[in-house]
Image (cartoon, rainbow, N blue to C red; front, top):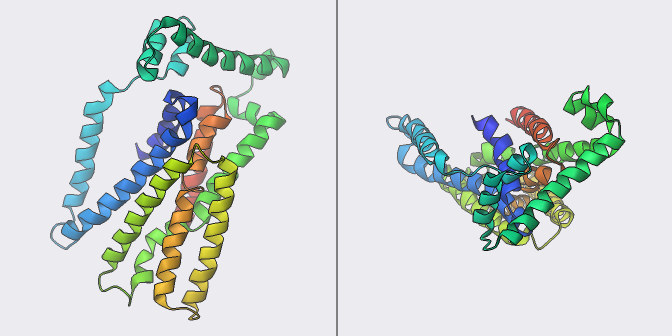
Length: 294
C-alpha cells in the first residue's frame, strides 16, 4: 500500500492541480511525509518504551481506517476521464468544481487544454511509428524514443540523487550526531523533524516562484557545503554543536530541492501515456536506493 501510494499520489495531485499551483500542490506530498515523521517523533516520547511501543503500530491502523473512510470524497482525475471519453460530463463537472468556474465557456476552455495536450502527444506518437509502436510495450517505447529516453534518464538520476544524497542516512542514524551533546537523542531527532517541516513549508512558498532547475542547484550546493562541515566536525576540526548546525542546514537545503522535486516533476515531464510507467520506474529505483542506504 505504501509503495502504491508513492506512485499514485504524485500523479493524482499533478493531474488535479491547476498549472499555476502544480508545484505547490505537488510539494504537498513531501510536506505530508515530513509532518508524519515529526508526528512519529513526538509520539515516540510517550510510546517509545518497553511496555507501550506496540501501541505505535495501532496508530498506523487508525490512519489507514481514516483514509478508507475519506476515500469516497476523492474526485476522479478529469484528465483520466477525458482520455477515456472526450465528451465526459463528469469530467466537466469535476473541472467546474475544482476550478470554481461559473460559466460553461470557462469549463470548455479548460477541457480544450486537456484534449489539446493529449492530441499533440498522440500526433507525436503517430509520426514516430504509428501501428508498429502499438505492438511494443510502453516502457520499450519510452526507451526507444530518444527525447523520451532523455526524460526517463533525468527522472531516474534525480531519484538516485534523492537517496544517495545521504538524507535518509542522516535520519536513520541521527542519534549518533546527538550523542554527547543532548542527553536524550530523541529530542535532537524531533528538533530535526521540526526543522524538516519548516524547510518543506519554505519549499511550498518557493516552488512556483523559482524554477525547478534553480532550486535543485541551490539545494545541491547547500547540501554539499553542509556535508563538508559535517565531515570536518566528525574529524574533530569543529565542535559537535557546529556539526548539529550543519545537519540542520543540510536538511533544510534538501527540502527546498532534492526532496520534493524528483517526485512532482515526473507528472510535469510526461504525458498521460507515459506518466504511470515513468513514476513506477522512479519509485522502484528510489526504494531500491533506500534499501541500500538503510
